[in-house]
Length: 271
Image 1 (cartoon, rainbow, N blue to C red):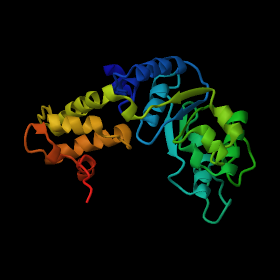
Image 2: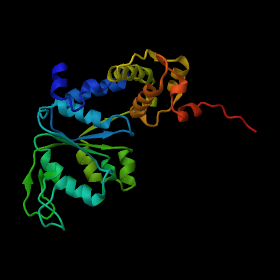
Image 3: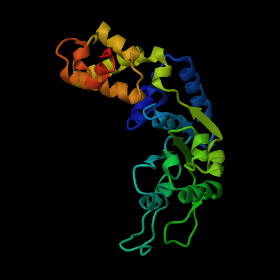
Image 4: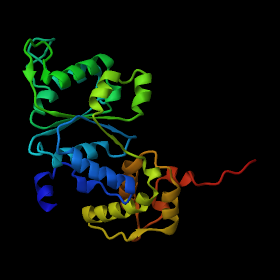
C-alpha cells in the first residue's frame, strides 16, 4: 500500500474506499477483477457517492496505471467548449483556434473518465460513440483520423434507463459503455458505514490539522444516523471538516454541526 501511495499520491486507490457494507465490499472485489481488462465501464450513482474514486481505483489497479488518468465532468462546461476539450482543435478551425490535443488524445495509454455523461449534448454523445468504436479521433477543423489507445470509464448520476427515456442519454452509447456496470448505493442505504466513515474522517482530519478530536457526542451520533445524507459521503466528509474548524472540546457536538442538520430534527408542532 505504501508503494502504491508513493506512486499514485495524486489520485485515489482502492484503499480509499472505506466501508464495512457487504455490498460495497463486493464492489471492491469487482473492481479488482475488472481492472485486469480494458472493457468500458459505466458507473451509476448519486452525487457524492464516489464515482471518480471507483474510476481511479480501476485505473491504478490496471496495466494502464503508469499512463495518465484524465477526468472531465461533462456538465461543468458548455457543449461547444466540451467538444473541443475532448477532441482537440486545429489552427484556423474557428476564430482564435490553435492546434491543441483533446483529452481523448492526451489520455493515450491511460484512462479517460467522463463524469455525468448524461448531461452531454446528444450529438456529442454520438461522436464519443464513434471514437470508442473506431478508436480514432478527429480534431475540430482537422482532416486526419488520429489513433488512440485509451480506456473509457463513464458515469451517470441518474438511472440510465430513465436517462434514455428522457433523452439525456443515447441508448446506443449506453449499451456500448455498459459492458461492465457499477451501481453505487447512497450512504443512507449503508447505515453501518455512517459512523464508521465518521471515525475515519475524524482520524484523517486529526492528522491533517494536527488536532486530537476523540469522536462525536451521543446526540451528534444520533443526528448522523437519522440524517438522509443527500450529499452522501462527500457531505459527511465536509461536515466533519467544518466541525473541526469550530469544535472547542475534544468531542464534536451538535453545536459544531451545520444548522440545516440540526433543524431537520426539530419537532414540528401544530398551531
